[in-house]
Image 1 (cartoon, rainbow, N blue to C red):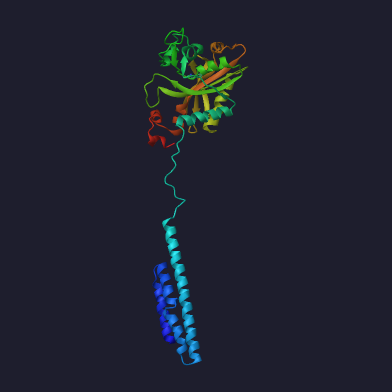
Image 2 (cartoon, helix red, strand yellow; image 1 turned 90 degrees about the horizontal axis):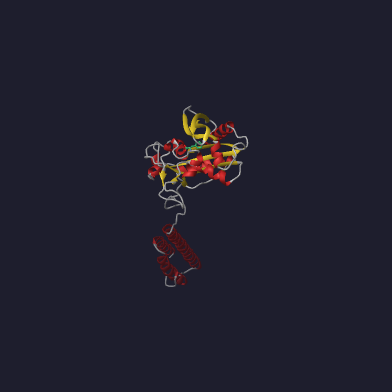
Length: 337
Ligand code: PHE
């Protein structure tokens, strides 16, 4: 009988091993360990055995068999449960480290970047930011800057006039400012010296676009008016700016030039570390007529002014070959910066 019990146990164990679902295991549990099961049948037959020893040995064998069957059922249940859970977890897995795409964050235009850096540098040098309108009067743009009607220097500014006449004004006196210098006049009329301002802004000239020119571009104007300001202050400011903006291995020089609104006038150039020069802008001592137009006495006040192109600085900083590329909004270009 013991052999039969063991054979029944082994058969039960292999059925349990083969069970593929929790439901099958539950059915096997009822069948193998239930009252109608084979092992229960052996139990009932124990009484028919001849000796106490035989009963003992067979009873022990049935108990052992039932124990290993119920142990196997528990393990199989646990295994199948784990597998089902693992399958569900795998199926519902959410990879929280995964992202669908890069966030598309843009950046400021090259000119805006240069504009803001210039403001930072000049504010760091103690300047205040000033502004003026893009649509300007002839008086602010030319006359007050010592360029009276018919002054030949007006010819250098290919001016775009606006078809608008203020009340009581002749047509042709309103224009798109050709430079940021009219902000000098507006500032002097607005505030008492000492004046230390920079005025970045958009300017317009009737120019055909090419690799180095655009009809709309940007300048930054500087104006200082105080007591006892000299050309040395101008040169020192230009040099301090050059080092702050470009780096300590850059330097600057002034070259004699002419502007109607400064006397003496100069061009200022910046020298790159490789020794080459870049012409950056114009500057000079504010002309007495300009101080007068701004309501200031040239015997009391003196000052210097400078102006240069922002687009040009952006072009130089990023080695852009054609200034027009900055305005065509071609993503292949824009995304490089
Ligand atoms: N306004 C001049 C220009 O556009 C530059 C300049 C500004 C020169 C201030 C001297 C002083 O060319």
